[in-house]
Image 1: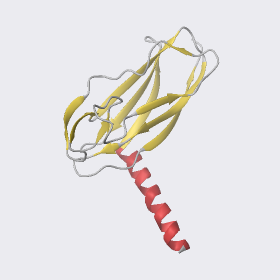
Image 2: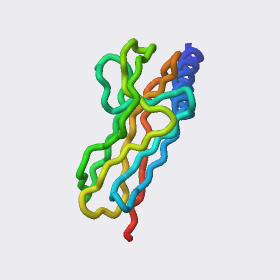
Image 3: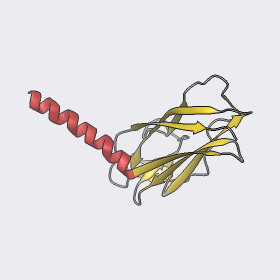
Image 4: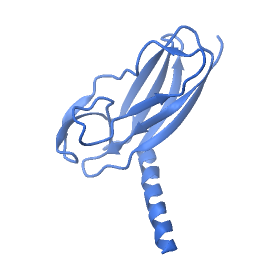
Length: 145
């Protein structure tokens, strides 16, 4: 019984690792726009869902949770470019998603120097299957000019 439990836990863990293999995150600070940019590079054949889905039934939308920091104020929510909209056979619905690459952006209000951290929750699918949602912690140091 213990072997079965260990196998099952390992099996679930391998799916989470597979999802991370299908997408790579790069977190950057853009000094000119005073914003944090969260870039997803997606493997061919896979797609990442938008923050804004037209249905509550279906995939997990991409979400961004930023840790609260003293002195850190935001002038906007996380912005995303225009997504693709197409019929997704996994959920039998028209859904918003991104392929290849997408950059999400959140603008800082005023001046902030220090660490910005948080968690991205996302889900990737191809035309045949979806991998379980992944929570990706991130951190970036904003240095003085």
